[in-house]
Image (cartoon, rainbow, N blue to C red; front, side, top):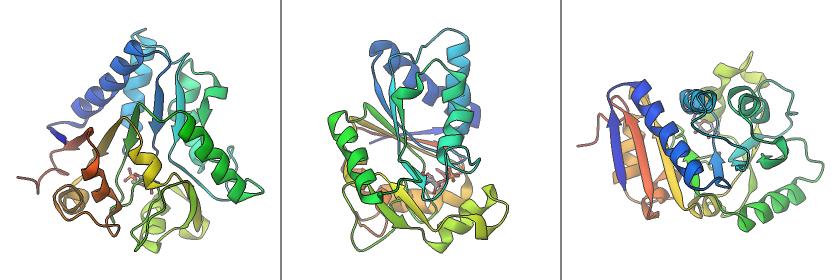
Length: 241
Ligand code: GLP
């Protein structure tokens, strides 16, 4: 595992966006696994900047997002589809037919999981971007005795709903369930880019990267990946030696 700790948020964002830019320039039809939450916003901002400066084109790129809330339509401003359009897709030249998220309002959720997995299996990501939940979740794979390999619906933990409530008008509006890629699909990516910011995540960063591998800390399974790149700001990295 390759861990990099950055002095400033801007340096981290530039570095991460640089990795994506390099990959896409070397492989214009790259497959990107993408993430939402507050952590990647600055990275997407820099990717858009690189696009505006003609350093990269997304025309041939295909994307698969990690997760989506159950019950939210893509035009709901709290859906991850809306988030991705706002922060990245609508601002670069990627054809929308090449961007994928689980359909939060699928009539047949099981069929939707199968549909998503079939796409992921056909074209695993060249690089999978990940944030980290305070309880060690990745995507929406919550701590549990058992983890699913493939796409599935999870019941969100109260702590996760509370953490994400800041984006909603009230906690009651936070969906109780979400579609998420499974840990098996995440680990199938050729490389994994885990990005974590903030002092409040220092403990879970240490646990996930140096603690025992356990389904109770889903991110600890990333330790098994041969190409794990971890980008931290100083605060998130403060408990690592
Ligand atoms: C959500 C997302 C995760 C994300 C996590 C951390 O639960 N499903 O993919 O990594 O939150 O979010 P943030 O980056 O806002 O701290």
